[in-house]
Length: 524
Image 1 (spheres, one colour):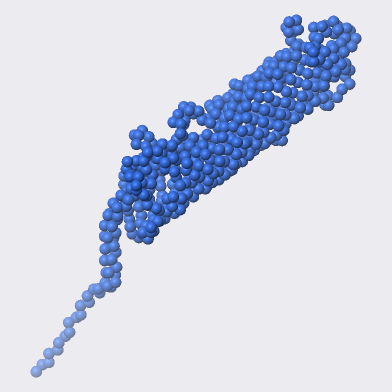
Image 2 (cartoon, helix red, strand yellow; image 1 turned 45 degrees about the vertical axis):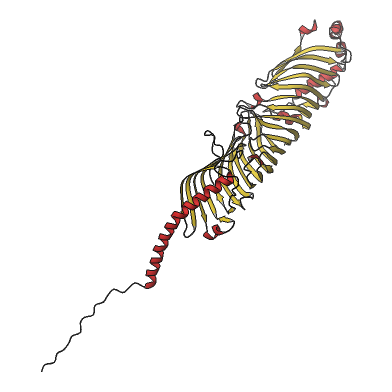
């Protein structure tokens, strides 16, 4: 009998089953994604409705929102396009707030708190229009009985923002600021926001960096919204104003409400110049109140220093309804000035006079694009004491006049010791200085003049009288003295003025003056 040998079948190797935990993980992820998608869809509708209601309630506005979406996992992420808040239902009025695109990020637990907490908000294409009409009549979109939810936004970033402030007077031009960088930190809907901003000042153009606190925003009257902070203004080009030049920097602090901001600051212009005059270092300290709704500024005190001179001023910088730009009106006082310092502002050579000066004037610079000196208007009085001419030749003539006026007909005098005093009233308009009651005094002689000086052409046109304490014959000797006695009756002085009055005229230019006898008036 033969034995039967059974050969075992060859084993078949099956594919190993995937680990059970991996299957569960995949199912959970797929289920989570599905649930998240469903939740995001429904949550998006709910959150959109609540967001619109909250904005309409808090800002008394009608809200328009184009695209909106919400992701709820792993964090709540909200994004949208075309957000517009309108408070003025006039179709031609700009919206209160307009945002091209926005996104927010928050944790689920943060949104479940009683005071909702949002980690960050990013705004792109933000435009804000603030006016006194803002909040004046609540939108029909929100009942007055509703209360906006309380929430905290930890950080808001809104670069390249445009802020437009519309003044109370609709005839005045709005103020526009281009804010390049803006970050806000909020403590809550009823609290002030901490801010930091970098923006460009429109006139004169320059960079401003500011930080501080703003708010809470007053919905019913934007001008009553509080703010506080400090600022740094750098690289402001004064050459924007025709007729002057220099680079201005300023630092200061401010506080108050938007329509009444109290400012205290300092400015520094190391290279200030008027036209082609030599630059001087000009610095000012000031206190002012600014109406942030229209930019009008009321200067309570300005102290300007340059070289060795100090000038005090107060006044206002105010817009004109229906016109572009602002008028500057000041009262100017210089009690301890130097003549050479004042002249250095307007001449490009060595100042012709040195001495003590006192000035009181009304200063007005109307708005416009023309040259500053052509637009400038002044009305005031001045006095110069112990003045001496820088030109030795002129100073010698003044000394000679003094000696002759005292009756000294010799040449024994010291030109450098003769000091002159000046006084007068003046007006300046359209580049033409008009002097009245212009007086010039040296020992033994005085001059009373009236006339004009052209700042552009430097042309002189004056006439007046030279009063001498001596008679003509006392100023000469020999034959000249004899003839001087003959003509003396033509020049007999008036009581209180001197023994001799000579009518004179001055023409030519500042650099080449022409002095002469006004013969027409001798025989009048």
